Length: 278
Image 1 (cartoon, helix red, strand yellow):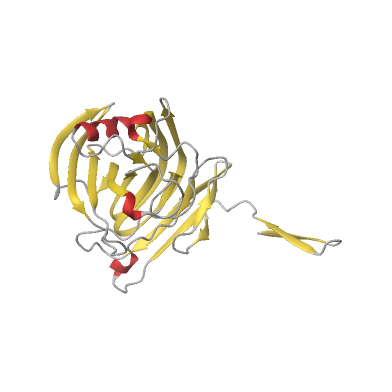
Image 2 (cartoon, one colour):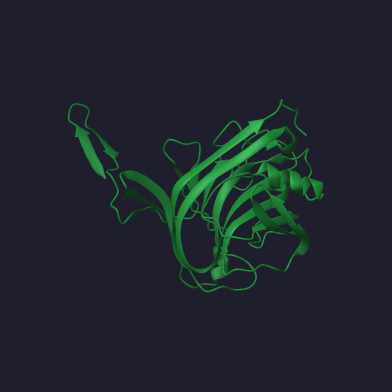
């Protein structure tokens, strides 16, 4: 970091210099939120269930590096081995609003009602290396109305809709099966669990957890998430009059270590005519 003092004013201002190619930590503090320059997105050091480590050491940090002349952002983690049946953390890039954070939306385009969305495209690419158990997913929190304020509001949550674009080790089971579906150029196995709760114990709210599991790992994809929302509505898993808070690109960590670098992350919502709040 470079600091310059203006003599006349006696004020020091500091700016970050270019990061090294091997990368540097931005912050290892839980819930640190860092804007992604040139975008309407942020990265968040989400350690939502750190207590599941049960006193064992762990680390998770937001990072940046210089790669091919461009500053890239990402995160690095090290957690204990997998403990059934939940995850430890979910470092993420966020576009929009989440009912868990209490921060303003990163964009005026989300939250939006499902039936007001014509499309919701996510275009991402990551460089990911990891050992252990994890998945790379987009998460959309489904809330009962477009929120009137950015305040944290878990009571509004009606659904947690995840699209697992990649996961290791391969294989998934344990929830109620909704069969398979081909959407766009991908095939997904669909699962859900009604009356799901917060494994970290911070809220008593219950909701429907829905998981679309891509049959092939995809670390780079341009995909319209409205296809997922419409299919979930046809299956009666979400209410189209409810709202999507935002789109989060998450590494859900069940154990082990790894590092992810964002090569791109863009979310493009397109709405039809505006609809009144639910």
